[in-house]
Amino acid sequence: MNSSYLINQIKEKRSYLCVGLDTDITKIPKHLQSHPDAVFEFNKAIIDATKDHCVSYKINTAFYEAMGLKGWEAMEKTLHYIPSTHFRIADAKRGDIGNTSSQYAKTFFEVLPFDAVTVAPYMGEDSVRPFLEYDDKFAIVLGLTSNKGAHDFEMLKTGENFLYEKVISTIATWGTPNNLMFVIGATQASELANIRTIIPDNFLLVPGVGFQGGSLKEVSEYGLNSDCGLLVNASRAIIYAGGKENFADDAKQIAMEYQTEMGCYLK
Image (tube, rainbow, N blue to C red; front, side):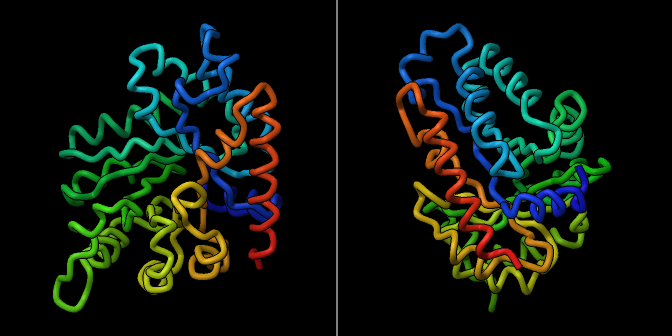
């Protein structure tokens, strides 16, 4: 999927919502837990309920890899069930020496039909470059995250700037807004205005709204650009909105509420 198509979807739906499928089998409704393919059945219901209100889905691969082969199969089935109209993200945070990253890129862009994969940039350009060599695919590079440990390295001062600023400004020269996005945590909304001076045109994937306490209003105020430029992810707040047999209806309601609020912020 290219950026123009994604932008059109955002405009048509008046939504820049990304639903995170961080599916933990121990947290899904009890009536599904005995199902032979419980994770996929849960995901399928969530997708059916939310697809009209979001433009993207993010599959956190850790929740599936932890289940071994069965989990990987559930992830593949989920990925293929997501409509092709939606931007499909593998939240895998890969990144290694060039020949290894090439295999990771092949996994998520050739073997699996994801549109984007999250990438850790610590090892430098050769660890990111293989993900940028595919047409209509995106590397979503970690920029400034919401976790407590962000202060260990990302927020270190290097001269007059923070380390994350150097990371973002350098990586921005490796690609274009057509193949490169950045992860910016919603709880770092105060930094978004500054980040937009560094990368005014790239899309930002923003996790941390909902259970982690990020403000959609603040993220939108500081992060939106003329093409929207945001994918705001909500995971637990949507997929675990309800714990009974009508859980999908509860998920739909929360997704609709996000969509409605987002429509108010879009230009």
